[in-house]
Length: 518
Image 1 (cartoon, helix red, strand yellow):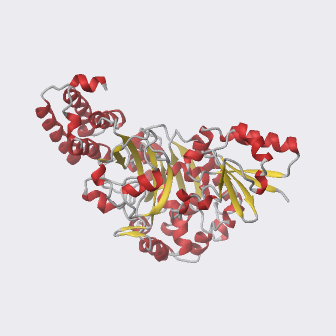
Image 2 (image 1 turned 90 degrees about the vertical axis):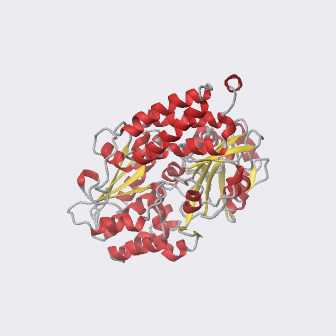
Image 3 (image 1 turned 180 degrees about the horizontal axis):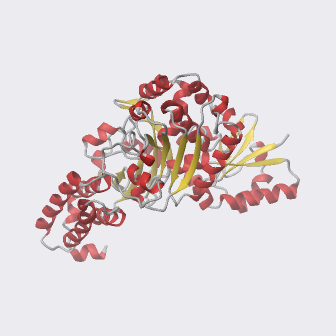
């Protein structure tokens, strides 16, 4: 009987030697004449244990990690294929506390399946949601998504079902599904992980969306820094097409739907939906004024659903298990689960999917295990580079859209970046302005000029030049950018700046020489 060895091909695992481990296993397996098949999967998201390999046994899988090429011979000598004891043996992966404490719905298959095998995808529950959707009319599909309470996971948190319904009701001879995979926030990687580890779930989600609104064409806009995800998506689209799940008659239903993956050009602003559409149409990524909404006049002026990877990839689970089953998770108006990405100065960084409602402190302590440096956590930034910096006294805030908004924060795409007590928040505030100045599309004055003036003014604060006066100027500038910017790029840049000033005022009053010495 052929044994199966699973080795991740996720970019994070590749960065720490997964390909070299796979090559070492292949060579040793050949040398020993063993009957072993190597399957490359996605990652489970326990990055400090990568490359984490798994062996399939009758009683389930056994994990080992982190594995290096020099460990391969010793692992085989220890009876790896039978789950033998070894210093790197982690046991059943589902029993690892980091995974056991999670509720994986969107990421249920990531790290388990062969990413480009339709047969393996189906064997793990894939396409059950599409089968159900094909038996429903468009209105019923939209109603199911609305009932689930799913909100856009890209950052805005807008109800997905309402957006779909707007496109469904629009009258046009052509409609589009556009997936925003331009995941550019610092500390985020959930979209990449899913596209590399379970790309068919995104294909299925986009197909269900197409059925719901009457679209026949879909595009996935992937950031240029994700070459592995781009390749994985193209392989998955080809596999789905060859299996009849994409094409002129999806699963023999008579509904036509095709998907193309497009690679971005490396602009952060193209994560904003109208800039993304401009780029997809072959133009420079400039923000469009709204209205009209993309749902009514989007790609090439046609009604368009623009959703994030997480939003679309969650739909198959909702359709397969029912809207109420999904809505049973979460708190308040934040229903279902949230893929949280834990990064920065943290001991156990990785992907955590859990129901809304877990506190920030639980994420940091229960999953993160403290800082990588061993020093106290001083601040965390949630929601990417435009998110607020939170001090310890706000760590008991539950992961919930409204709870975060109440303390002037935002969940965004679910990215958390951790800083220990050596961080200087005044310099982080300057970085926010600098980031905006570099990444602004330049279309509106408050963002283009405001960010540059912000850098200059923060430099005066850091140098001790008329601090009180210049901090007052920063406050005025932030108010202007918030109220007058054309999109969230300029409108949210004040969030990290003002949170740093509010929660860490001492950092803005340090003597210049002391700041320079640090």
